[in-house]
Amino acid sequence: MTGTDFEYNQFEVLWTKIKSAGKLPVGKTRIEVVPTLATKVGGAMDITLKVNDKVVAQGRVPTAISLHFTTNESFDIGSDTSSPVSLDYYD
Image 1 (spheres, rainbow, N blue to C red):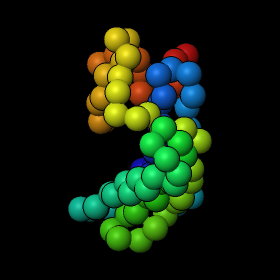
Image 2 (cartoon, rainbow, N blue to C red):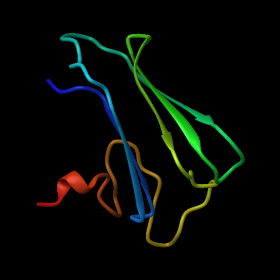
Image 3 (cartoon, rainbow, N blue to C red):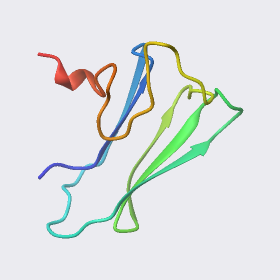
């Protein structure tokens, strides 16, 4: 099993990755991503990753989208119907 990873893909221009150090526990597990706007809309966003209510990682996305999407992008969670969620999918 791997740890908890969060990746923010901003229009295939800027990727931010936040990773936990530990592995996920075996069995039923609750994973929570808590985004908090740090400045104004379109500015930085703080991310807290929790596993079973315990904080496992924190980080900052330098700029976050302001609730709009371009014609080459979409809003997907867990998969992406437009660009790959992560550059890790490329060889």
